[in-house]
Amino acid sequence: MNDDDAKEPSIPLPPGARVELLTEDLALISLPMRNAAVPDALTDAEADVATRVFDGESNGEIAEARGVSARTISKQLESIYRKLGVASRAELVLALRAPEPSDPSSAGEPQTTVEDHDAGDR
Image 1 (tube, rainbow, N blue to C red):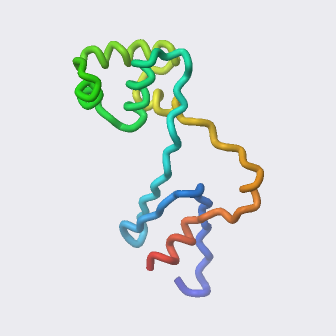
Image 2: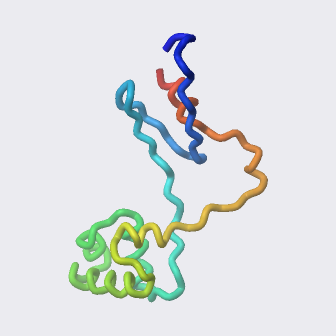
């Protein structure tokens, strides 16, 4: 890019975000996941299953870890979905995301941008 080219816009990223340049025109942005916020409406077993789904485990992995059948996990997920008003694993993960912390002390901190990462990786 020379001085005559328009400056590319930078994109603010949340703290903890990582940028990996895959090609000159393609970057992979990884965002940290917060801990699951499990509602009190779930039983202990359902809370464990929901947390494991949040962490990316399959039904088979959850069943093996809990010492039950994959069918039991499927039935528990049906109950979890009904209680939380969701229809899929993706919706469950979104429903379990803890709310963003509202820390007024971090309001003045500079934000990391894709441009910041881009410059350091070349």
